[in-house]
Amino acid sequence: MTRYDFTDQVVMITGAGSGFGRLAAGAFADAGALLALCDLDPETLQDTVRLHGLDEDRILTMGCDVSAATAVDAFVAACVARFGQIDVAINNAGIGHELKRMADLDEATFDRNIAVNLKGVFLCMRAQLPHMVAQGGGAILNVSSVAGLLGAPMMSAYAAAKHGVIGLTKTAALEYARKHVRVNALCPAFTRTPILDPLVQSGRGNTLDNMAAAIPIGRLGEPAEIVQAMLWACSRENSFLTGQAITLDGGMSAG
Ligand code: NAD
Image 1: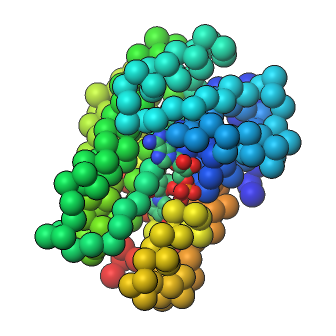
Image 2: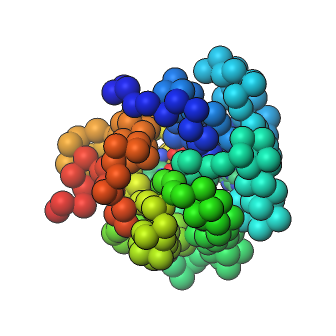
């Protein structure tokens, strides 16, 4: 991975107990950051810490459901109490849902997906932005999806939430540009993480090979490719990048 310097910058990552969030924790720590990590399942954060050999003195870990305002506010407050600021926020926590055509999707599944994938990002930004404004700037990266740019058959709630994340991102970027807070979204296509497991196990004939075939480059994304983009997008050198949906999809959205 290309080296970026985040020495003593405070980096907050939601959903850091698996997939992109877990790998990002290791990458930002390697780049010198102090970390505030949360996940719905706090046990998984201990595995993240062990896996990367992270220095406990430079990390805050906390259980947090990003769909609950009180939990998000408490996580952000704990980060500021511990480290004094938030330089970078990666709002990454997310869930998929059962593959169903729209007419067959139940209301509870729709509501939960919107609550975690869309409202969660709103609640995180709402809590993070005042601190970034007060300290004179910062960088926020919201993890959307290529399903935030294109229709996603059988994934209507997920696609709606991820499109909404881009709307929130662009709006926040405009509202806070003069406050030196950069806000961008990342839009990956299928990348090999545990979020794909239920799709493969759904019995609908989805295989990793089928997913790879839908990507022009002919393979799934690798988590390291997504994390590399997180480092790039949030680095201070990238000071003119804001309001963008950065697409990492092996060419999927080009066709
Ligand atoms: P993952 O399942 O490996 O990790 C997601 C993490 O989010 C898990 O640790 C999970 O416990 C946590 N989480 C779920 N609900 C939460 C909640 N309510 N509060 C706090 N934490 C919660 O999946 P991943 O692929 O690493 O996904 C990370 C992000 O990337 C998600 O937003 C996902 O939608 C997005 N994404 C993934 C892909 C892909 O193919 N892997 C593609 C596009 C977008």
